[in-house]
Length: 391
Image 1 (cartoon, one colour):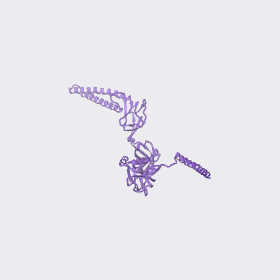
Image 2 (cartoon, one colour):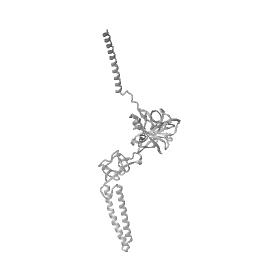
Image 3 (spheres, helix red, strand yellow):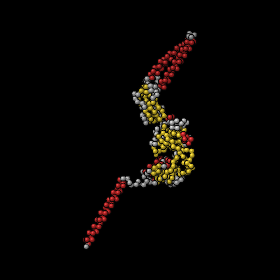
Image 4 (cartoon, helix red, strand yellow):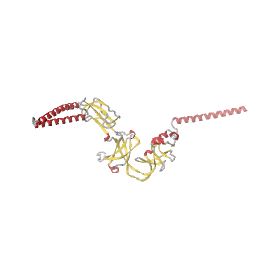
């Protein structure tokens, strides 16, 4: 009887193990499948950071309070980037010739005075020969004039003859100086080979090269272009119906098609005086700093220009646009607490104006948000840096 009960107990335990094993295996398989397909949630990011004074100084962290104000209405202007003509230079030959050497490389940085192209110019030989001949005749004419003036003093020569000789000598000397200036304009000295060098007229970046060794060139031909790219112009089109709404000095925010998540701040510094008869628009010029060397000549984009009138005087909670970043695909700001720590706040964004953006939720008026050095804080959060790692 006891043996029968023991056998029944073993049978029951075996059934439990068999039913538990598939369930356990299914749970493990589900967990593995979830991790394999990336269905698990991201590890929770740290919400607070504490930085040492040294880190704050190195990252140039600056804060500003969230305030309520009326956002400006904006006008959208399509346009493109252009070089400042005062910071653009083109290389050309002063005379017909042939390219002997090219040191021009697209994208290279050059300094004013650097040799970029060496040319062989036959014209130099003609001018140099004429100079030598003229200098010889001028020296002879000057000697003859001096001799005749000396004889004139002894009453042995006619006054008119001495005067003619002096005039001829002076004319030949002027002609010789003119030929020297021609050689200088050609970039050659009074003696030497028929080679001239074209030097960089400004410091900047080589943006175009059109010179090839052995190529014949003429004075009206461009061999290369150089531009200083520290600043560029955004040339926006203002249509006739909007012309009265744009003012000099209006702040604006540029968004380029190449960098949809970047903003470039500037001000309208010039509005054109002539309407394009085809587009029925004038040009509004905005000068932009080439932050991070992102700007390229010819990039298209739009300018959001602040208009003088505010949007009905509605007071909105706003922060500088530089305060907002994206972390885990969510717009966020960093708030400096009273104890000096920085707390990450997810926020809901509203309307935008040049340089500013409305906060609908996630922030209170008066809270100090980081407006400079945001990238440093974001990097520390993404690396999972806690207070003791930041000190």
